[in-house]
Length: 142
Image (cartoon, rainbow, N blue to C red; front, side, top):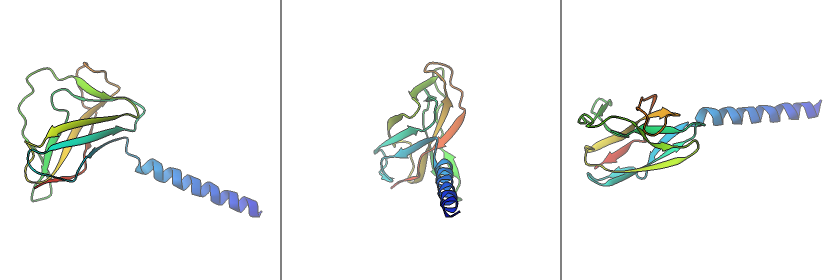
């Protein structure tokens, strides 16, 4: 009887740990190399693909800069239309990591983040169709 209670307790603890891990895991995550930048500084974002599928980004704008306004809403920087066909590029294999490096010329002073449109199991060179959006951590441009 005592062994059964111990086994039930261990089973519940393992189940709770697995549930916590499953709920807290992020399938695709983008994290910048720093939390603070000056205008024009280079920013590196590490994209970790925790899914079982490859993910690809747009050839036109793989990342978009957004700024938090005074009301707390996110406003996207206005980009020019893409001058060439938008295709899937810069693919990250399942479980892989990809680094993007960009100058923060478009970022305004204040709190910012990067928006990344992604497609799953698409092949580089295929027409890009965004299936999901991920956001980087928030960073400040001073």
